[in-house]
Image 1 (spheres, one colour):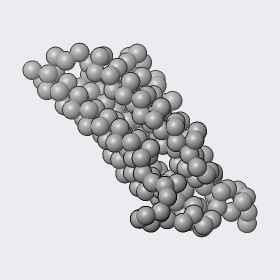
Image 2 (cartoon, rainbow over the protein chains, first blue to last red; image 1 turned 30 degrees about the vertical axis):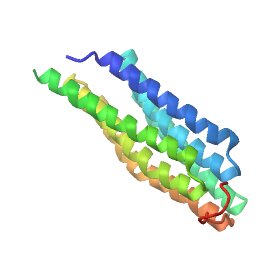
Image 3 (cartoon, each protein chain N blue to C red; image 1 turned 60 degrees about the vertical axis):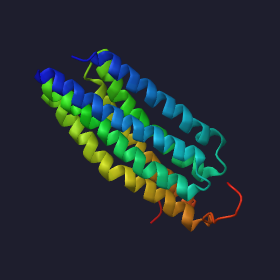
Image 4 (cartoon, chains in turn red, cyan; image 1 turned 90 degrees about the vertical axis):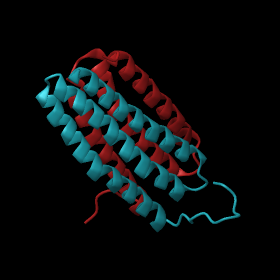
Length: 92
Length: 109
């Protein structure tokens, strides 16, 4: 019988601290590739944080938002890397 | 009895995943190069997030939320495919535009 609300709260605060640590690299990182990689990392961490927040507030609908955010983050990362590689997004 | 076992298993998976996520964030801060930073985050973050979601899946399965278990399983499978793909795409873009790898003795960048 562990106090699960407090456990989820502690894990959520730890994930928020790792997001702050990654935000340093996203703001100050030298070059655009460091920033793109840090934004990708922050997005994947935010997906897990959304699931944990759903358990803290006892509302399972946060998992749906997490699925949508994971898909959007993946597409955004692929498009950004393709744009940085070729200088354009969609070409024949 | 079973509830205690489920709570301890969930807490163990959550702490395991949180440890790996903290390790990945420290690697993203401290490594000297772009490629080594992606090496740290691409593996540590995938394992940590999947461990945390697996712990949440055990908790939901005991407390009677089957649809949440299915959605969390979908997120886990998506992470296993999407996270290495995104890392590989960024790394390939950086390599083709001429970012040099770091060698021993050079300056950190």
